[in-house]
Length: 385
Image 1 (cartoon, rainbow, N blue to C red):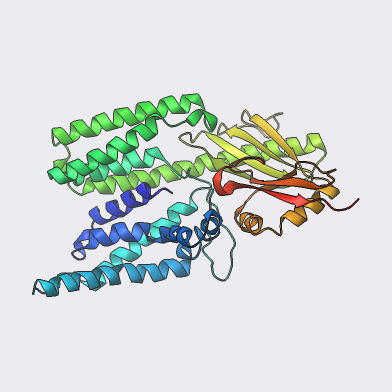
Image 2: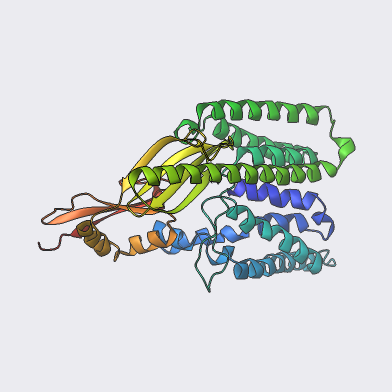
């Protein structure tokens, strides 16, 4: 998930009661909730492929999370103790309280990251296997609104806090209203998201101005966290239904082409829990299409309104020779270690001098694209005929 979501979860955990464990607990909750993303610093020591190789790596694993859960409170406690010495005052921080706050907050990070289709590798360094929850899109404005609204009402007492929330709102609102959703979601979803966002922001401002939330106290954050859990429960149901529909459609597609289904996944799209992107692989091709969450009969001729079916045929045996040569490239090796549905296309299989082999992860793009680490093109020399 994005770092705003992780920060909101950490702040909500603090305001739900963890900030009572020790002074500086809120700081620890915020740092711990974001700490695993320190792996992005690998970009300072390499290129974008280095980041792709290490992102959601060891720092998101069980071992890395455990170590960071110790390091974050230790650093904050040491800094607090240093400050207290300079002020000749007893250190107010309690390490045990900071440790508990850190352990609870940091666990939310890999758990949230698991919920989307990017995945996590919790068994590193022993196993690099990826695990995918396929429940929530990597950026979810509905989570921003629910958790952001709850902690905003509880932490907007001073002008400095109001100013900070104003900045957050001024940045997030244009991102939501101007997001280019039609490429990956339905137009109706864009309109619904805009209406919910604007209406929610207006309601929150009214509640804050008239102080309608004050009788609720901390329970408003607990309510926000409860709504978040219920929301993920709803996403689980939607994913389960979409996967069943996708599997039904995949069997029909495989049968119509005389192919054997190897695997399939139903993945979330931005702002629309009722429409899911599906990627499937057979022995001869890869497919990408969309399904809805409407229940369908297994006796029907088609599943829940599949749309935009795309077929990507696998290369020939000669093309596989060129692909094998391209796989020796460092960038391709890193890419294949990340990609969940890797596909390859050879620009000219009957080449004489040199050809271009294009790789892509069908979750995000297709061969020939230049979308960050989700695609790569490698020139290779053609073998003698």
